[in-house]
Length: 372
Ligand SMILES: Cc1cc2nc3c(=O)[nH]c(=O)nc-3n(C[C@H](O)[C@H](O)[C@H](O)COP(=O)(O)OP(=O)(O)OC[C@H]3O[C@@H](n4cnc5c(N)ncnc54)[C@H](O)[C@@H]3O)c2cc1C
Image 1: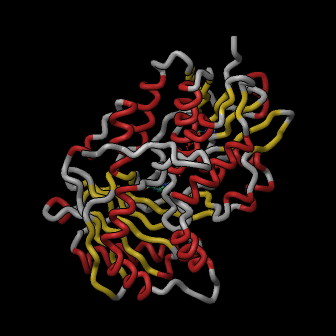
Image 2: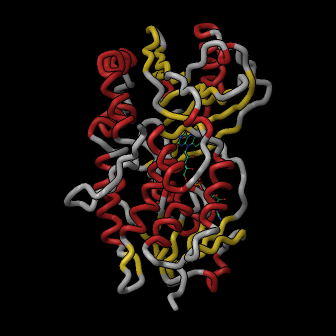
Image 3: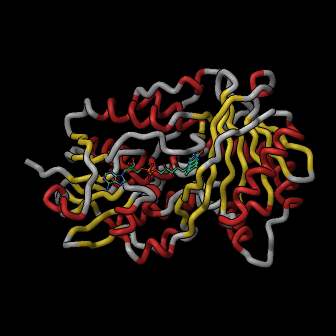
């Protein structure tokens, strides 16, 4: 009988790895610390939502309801409005549904336990590290941890008035944020609001206040947060293909997935789909004959897929500009690009969500969700 491969972290990346490895006939044991409502905007592309619904029988109500348009806003310019491009999900609900679904799979065993370095008896020779931004990740990847950049994000949830009358998600770009602010609306006047990016910690709260003022004054959302939001970090690597995908500790090869490898989008820090994508590619890198993951193949697939999805030349260009010290991101340029190309950008995101093209390095092998 085959020894299961251990997966530490049972959220997006870990559950995706479990699903795709199990489909290749590889037994897995997943360890998850606890289900909690991880702070997250919860925006996923419509195609990915449909994929989860069709392939994994996940219930995503927002995908079947009216999908609000997206207003792209800039400090001194009028908003550019596009068709709806994404739906908002609850992260804890998605995690719970995925776990329930995967528990039915014969090759998947999910256990609730926080793994520490003392638990070496529970780990396999190759262990999947899908622990996101956490102390455990830091212990394993050590110096690579310090090479990451971290997007900071603030998030707040509440109710407001205007969204129910004229629902539109709002994405606000401001060069000083080095990222964006968002208002994602849900049912019954619910919303979640936040700002995130490569912004400095010392100004993030002030920028959040300013963002709320803009949202209320210019767009009449009438948002009155009464709780102070917390700061969260999202690991980001621009040049993922020069970093290792596996890390050795105590004789175990830990293979990273999702946030562990800093896969979130380098501009908007969206990491759900890249995390799912990495789990898929781990499955595609599994070698049945040796019952092991071919890490060279995994790295190769990851590079190809990132180049096709979240690390397209356009994304690299924008994120490089954001990182240049004396070249602040020009709001005018962002506005002009969005105004001229908004239809193209919308079409691209609809056609190729960040994980949609699974690529074997030679030809496209993958999947395009049928959203008809
Ligand atoms: C404020 C904020 C807003 C965001 N908004 C968006 C958005 O709108 N869209 C988007 O696509 N992305 C967004 N992201 C990014 C997204 O949340 C992450 O990129 C994504 O969750 C990465 O998934 P993951 O599975 O790699 O890691 P995680 O989701 O962090 O999962 C790691 C799991 O490992 C478990 N774990 C950790 N240590 C251990 C241990 N020792 N033993 C057992 N289990 C352990 C944790 O409990 C957790 O469940 C946002 C992030 C933040 C912080």
